[in-house]
Length: 45
Length: 236
Length: 224
Picture 1 (tube, rainbow over the protein chains, first blue to last red):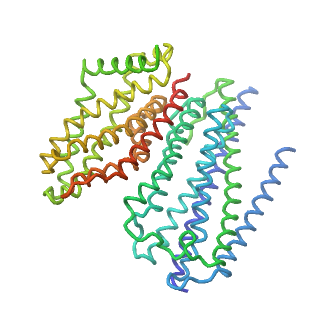
Picture 2 (tube, rainbow over the protein chains, first blue to last red):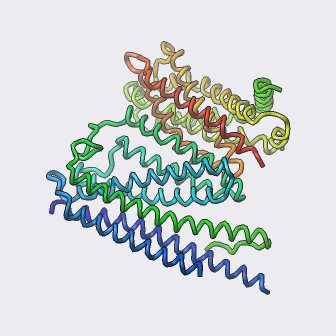
Picture 3 (tube, chains in turn brown, cyan, orange):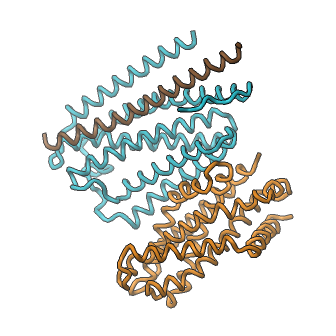
């Protein structure tokens, strides 16, 4: 199992990047939804 | 309901990509032979190279979307372009991070200024510039046109950068890794690489679709806001 | 007006404006001089070392100068509100691009001609025997710089933080120009001077590709 730690580190780093990207998308969507609700409320009032 | 249907689609898509990733992981860890001199770390090759090709594919989508936007002026093309650029940068980041982790135990150094590494880095910088430009132009129409022109310029530069670095700057022998393109790569290795590539492209499609829908939502909101003359709620 | 006449008209107008104040030329020349002096502190500027690092130093200075002066060169129009007048005038966008790019080319070349002897004297490089060749390399590299730079300046005027944005967009794109120009200059300044024809062809290729792309795409940046 030569250099196994490096392999593990590389995989972890790679998945971390995709994970962070995914979280960023989810957060932006949540924020936009909130804004949409906000706009709807202003329109109704 | 429409939203329910798309949710089901999203879920099944995610599961499909997860399953493909599982198969690819199994192939990488259990089917691919262990490389003699490099040891286990060589197994990052499949993931690393597949990410690189997927990143190029994403940037090619940006280029096509840029051209289409300039010719047709439909906002969808602009939305596709920005979505593909961001996803491409994510893949490119993976390439740039896994590369040094692989290089360190094998070459003893984190980085070498070889053609492929350096041009990938320049490519990354160009598309980060693309996103930066977008964040600095207010008007949606102008943002779309200026970033489309820049995107085309950036894409044209990719092969030129690669050739220039390859001709003048590469100091060490060309096939660094036993498995550079086609240089005696074991057939099993090739097959595993293809499986990995399929899994990464599937991931690209999934991420691209999500990012694209986010951009569409943003576009609609922008339109709505202009329509009723409301101020955007401040970010953070 | 034909394209040629219109281009000439814009070029002449740009040069006249610059000759009146000379602010662009002055700032560019001082900036390049400053970079050249600052560089001497980063290595031992002996003859040997200068031969190794000189070409890179020269081109980095020019690249930074170009990426800093191209935006003001373009933007001056906006202050005087003449860009919109130009747009309304029946002048093809191609002529606007060519006129602007040529004007920037002239400004940068003048700055380079001023810099070259100073650089040669400060770093002890023999430039005179290969002067003609060096000028050709300078012209080809500068052409690549102003072509892409003028388009990016037209992009920049529509953005916030434009003075900072332009170098960020332009410098990575110019990596091939930097590499080829440095290589060509280095082989001219070597102990046995030679012409790096690959680099020359490469620079010509870069210039042609981006001239064509700019001519095709510039009009999109001028529309409202």
